[in-house]
View 1 (tube, rainbow, N blue to C red):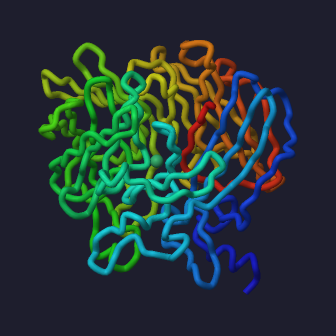
View 2 (spheres, rainbow, N blue to C red):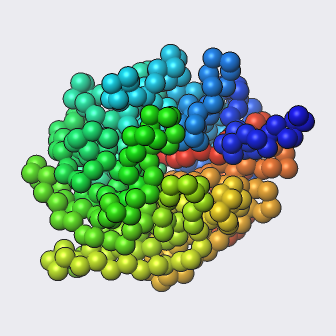
Length: 447
Ligand SMILES: [Fe+2]
């Protein structure tokens, strides 16, 4: 069999720029085009699957399960100080410990650690839902599992929310055994102060959630846990419309776990853009899939930007399609998490082949307008993270950061756009001597 034919038999996540890199590097001499804003001082960290492949480490069954690798870029005084990449040393990585034990229960210290990386209360945490976080240093070395001093006894979503008003870290866990969902809150000092089981009809895949300044929103959507699929090592979730689709709204600070549930049209949402409260309504923008992972089909329509409005006193829901272009990885200025906001950013997907997104979008949710920054043929951006200009509170005063893969050179760039001049050429491009595989989420961590 030719090499090309063999490559075509590989699953998509082992081909092209989904394929893992094999080296951990530290690079301190970096070529920069343009000018890195001097107001930026800190590091951009991003996580993603990068399965370690060798005779002892077989390929994972799905893109979502590959060993996590962090990619970091540090800037200071207008200079790019370093790029480095490090695997997250989970017990899946070091010992090949399986996430699910022989009793069917999760091992919270295993898991890939591959989905996001955040900072809260002075700790940097690599996250993958279903397991505990892994604490890492600012230089991306793994310290070990972090369980909030023994208080966290469940997994932790990869999408916790830092309330910009209180500094609290809100998050949840979902499990295939009851309690299927547990909501958690850590205070600004990083102490876990609240863990509340949430009643739902059964186990579903619950990737992300949303908060407002007064409420927590949980999405109970019809991608259900399937034990038979789990037992044969496949993706253990599938579409089941009979589960129904609902969004639960819980008061922040209420220890009862009481939810007000709103039925929505069946769909799946990996990622909300943001939620806020306006005149007694909760308004949420989401990247909404019409369905996901129907049994026997691996094809599905991509997500597009929708708005849900939940009328708390009246109990009604309104759903509006805001755009018909496929998107993913919605982000905002995180200083407005849970508050009224105007601007959102997303990666535009061009088709269901998933890997040909060459544009970022900037949505003006007040006017309905949007702008597109196209990096050109063969140049693929990942999630764009907003780094605010620390000298102002103006919402879009700052920069967007992303790793952009260039297929022609098989290398990646770290690209900085001025968020207020979104369609203009980048203000700075840091050329990396390697490629960064397509991955998931990251954050800007200012010093
Ligand atoms: Fe995600």
